[in-house]
Image 1 (cartoon, helix red, strand yellow):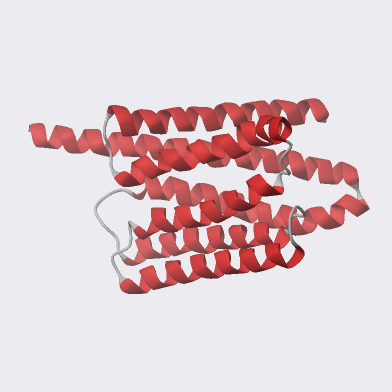
Image 2: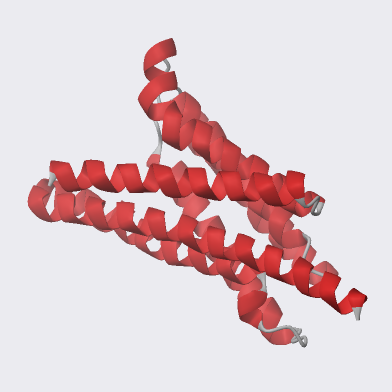
Length: 227
């Protein structure tokens, strides 16, 4: 089981690095939008915190993982609030997204500071999961309400939304069922952890697919101007 876990960690690191490099290529080489630029920034933060942070930075500077993980959760909520609000044209959708982001951040700060550092409050992780769930579901509902001529599968936001919805559902399952399983059956808990690593990998694979949509749509627009 330990060998499989290390193998999945290795695959995860590779997928995150590939997503980061591809996003950098789209931004620098092809000069895409600010939204694309900040997607690259998000992936850089993921790389720093998740790939080298826990393994190298934390050990090198003797930093407790909470000091990396808690700011990353706040940053993730703020980033995806920015990511989604670019797509919305109605004030109602802006208000809802801003509200769930503000509540998630406010509750995260309350939960974490109520117990203090360096201990991590799992309710902070729950706030991020719930924000991801609501934000991705809001996007799908928005697309249903405002249908356009573009196929949904060539929208970057579709793959990003699908990825974080896919991840959030299992993360919620792991957060609550995993706590019970840890004391009841640690072998099953280990399997759940392995599956969660698989879901992490697939989320970033969906992000890469979304980045390919960005490339495809800009190229298609360029070709249409040539005709």
